[in-house]
Image (cartoon, rainbow over the protein chains, first blue to last red):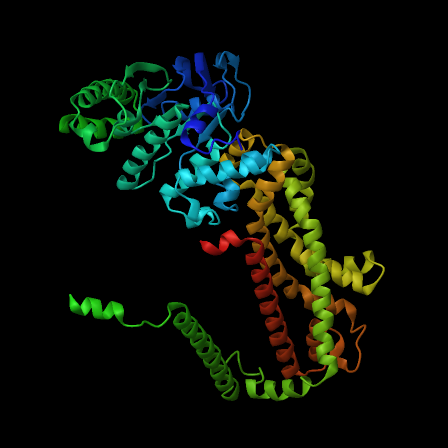
Length: 294
Length: 278
């Protein structure tokens, strides 16, 4: 039983947070003539035990970067290292939470959570205890025998968090995980997710297009340029944790950061607008409204 | 306010029950209206319906058959043939479909042949089936098999290819081997499509049973001339100008197909419990 982190302190102690480094990475798609470079000479760090949030206009290469970090695809040039060891292929040390739910529809919550240990042949009574602990942690103890379609959107995201956590990854990568949830659920998930992060201090990399989500969650905020994607700016979000929704609204520092982030994003969007991108036009419109409101 | 409370407190009819009743009532009305129109159309010699025997005559032909051992032997013969042809189609179609969906090479090698054979109607296979196979029963089974296999394969291939790529990525990240992915992602992921393919496929096997049993020429019939299988029963009645018997055979096949599909659907829900909840 000693190996099982069945309380928050032990859970935190069992985590070996990792550090990801992206150096000069480029990636493009398509044949020679019609090749589009999605990411060009992109460099950044995902620091150990920090929650790094990446924000950028849609189509700026965020999802491509996630596929590269997870090892689903290889960069055309440049290197990605985890704790100084090069990343090659997908592995349990870098787990991805996808947009919308990627829970296996044919498995109950319980079987979904235990997917990883079963795949690696690591089933034991300790693993089951850990699954129980995580199930309670994400508030789904009553729902262990339910299939994903029987869970609400918020429950599905929490089940997916548990399915990733049981594998004890050194980095968690989240690709707009709360997209598609209604506003209330989404804000509850911010609070829930940041509490979970604060408890575990696992290295987290969170990609979003929502500036409020980004500032609420982040220790460090990476702002992406327009395509081909590069990190345009890095902002340290030095607002003390734990953060609450109400406190963030009233926090002058938060609003200050939001203003400077938005002006950079706006600039980037204008650039792509001049390149004639349709997505950029929507983006400029949406963000102009936001800037004028705040 | 009090009105709201009162209406909430009033016991309501259980929704499941009342829908079921509606459902059954509608089905009964639908069949009754159909029979009445048929009877009238037949008695009044309406165009197109004119020479079709009315339902009352069909019933009078059918009732004595219900105690005829030969008629029930036909049910047994046809069911046995349909089932064996269908099982063979499943046993070969599902692994082939899975192999085509998961292996590029296998797909490239087999797809052209598959695509050329697929549009050939089972009826066109009848002469070839007679020549190819040593026994009559094998010929019949083969034609039925051809009726079901392409639908099953198409559904398996389509189902396997439409599995969300994120499932594979997630499984791979969590340490799954190829075999593990096949067993725990591809197989359950394709199962709903297998069920749909089988449901449609078994319907088609009943469609081709007439063509298949024309081969038989009533072989294996016992007790009475009604014993060569339901498909043969129709053909034989046609040869003998017995129109009410043709209609009896048609309705019998319709009922058999309906029951088969219902059984497959129920079995399907048993093996894919997560589909029940959508």
